[in-house]
Image (cartoon, rainbow, N blue to C red; front, top):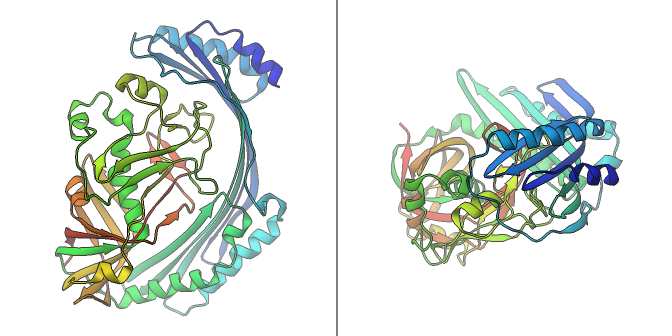
Length: 454
């Protein structure tokens, strides 16, 4: 196969051309209530060719190696007819590497029956929790992905990744009051990631039932303590996407807002995107342009210092490449995407974050939300009142909203307890979903957060 790819590269008559081949094996098991909706393994194979000429890309996909040479010609044709004389590609040194998956216990060596039995056990815990548990949803997934990347610049990469994860949700009902709680675990560490979550499943059930009895939160402005999960979601959605350079490369307003050197938070605030963190769901090793992943500070000591780039956006903005050009699979063009995005650990114990809060909220979990430039709205899974520095009763229907830049500046403390989350699902952008990513944070304390409620 290598000889065929190199022959195809010899056909290049443009500034740059790369070839991406991919093979994947995907096992999925889905329980919805009592029903086993899905249990099976699928295989997928294909590739793409990306040609770059005078500022424009041409892109063509193929499903058989026999179609490679035709795809090379098509990608070059498209690049030539759409040339814009725009920016080129940031120069990078060619690399040759083979990256094997880092797993202790390969999920592909376990039978489908064993995986179904695991999902069934978790599902039975939910459904056996009493009559108020209306339904459940349990998803197991493992995925082997092998990619081959060759370019006219001399880069040759063979990369293997193995993902494995499980998620579970409990739906509780009391009359017209329906509440849901969920949790998810997923990364690239192997089959051990999905084992021994019985206690986690029981906690999910308990939370769904407790939410039935919880009061709706009273709307207002609060000092809040965010748990690592919703804090990670916040930094990914509200700030991480703004840091993707393709959003700002031709947006003068956003470039002015996201000017490097501007203060974005207290001295102890550090925000990082790092695709080199082996084992995390967002680990990549190399991006889909063959650029080695690295630790990229976005905010350092409270100051905006960086953003995420592809080779083209790096050239356009006169900055270094960061290793953040990614596609969900061979059938999509790489675009600027996050990897493992997180707030770095601080120096506060959890009790210190609660100190002095007379009326606040301890907010846990994220159900979803939306962003519009710097404005955000997020729904939490649940929250607890904080009164005189102590955690009190649960409340529900908690919606946080505000301006991300003001919110970052209102951070009053960051905990020591950094936790990274991967789970199943992923990030969506321009129709490419789900991209494997991780996010996370320690507990953080923020003042003047607007909470919607009754």
